[in-house]
Amino acid sequence: MNLAQHVINISSAVTQLFFPPICISCGTHLFKHEIEICQMCIRRLPRTYYERCPSDNQVSILMWGRCKIEYAYSLFFYKKGETVQRLLHEIKYRSNKPLGTELGRQVAKTIAESQREEIDVVVPIPLHPKKERKRGFNQAHVIAQGISEVLCKPLIDSAVYRNTHTASQTRKGRYERWQNVENIFNVRAPEQLEGKHVLLVDDVITTGSTMEACINQLRTIEGVKVSVASIAYAVL
Ligand SMILES: [Zn+2]
Image 1 (cartoon, protein in one colour):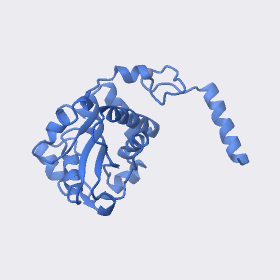
Image 2 (cartoon, protein in one colour):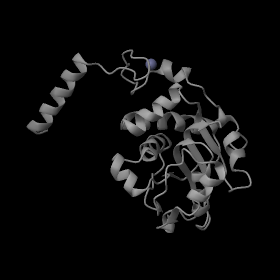
Image 3 (tube, rainbow, N blue to C red):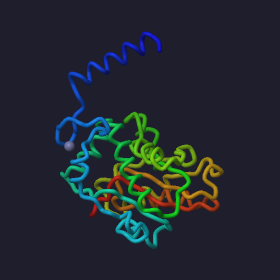
Image 4 (cartoon, rainbow, N blue to C red):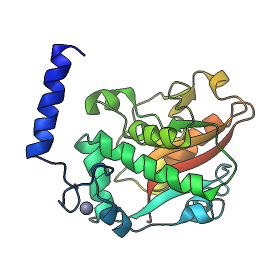
């Protein structure tokens, strides 16, 4: 270890001593094994328990007749003004990457418990490069890192990409949203995913249009099966 690393380690130990990490939701001090949010707050969040019926839940039903998926996993219900929205906001707009990765780990634990057919690779839904440059990172990527870590499956982010800039989805209806995203994804390196069961990851699923567009592209690759995972499902 060189001198600079020693100084960094000492200063982070001092910071921990005077400013011990606190839960971003309730403000209590965190235990050593807790990251960004305490277990108590996680337990209070509105769970979907979709992992108990991964092929027959509101998210998988949302995709019926639009694109074929194997399983759908969403950990929490998302409602405006509630804690889950605040957590996702914290990840996306305040660059809290450790929180994203930690919530990804929580998603993966429920997937592991569901004991369904194993997935092979974890793929974060791509963000437009312009947006990623502006934000500095892709929130789906940090969530996928946590999932990949717990499931011990590789994260692949170079096989599919986003090819046009789309306007914000927030003020659009379902059909307009679909028109807006229909052709935004392309496959660049199909050989990375051939014959694989892909777990496609996003932060929140709302209408499912973005997922649908990406899944339809992924399914052009030979032998690909797709399941989806997100931290939250927004009931419209
Ligand atoms: Zn808390």
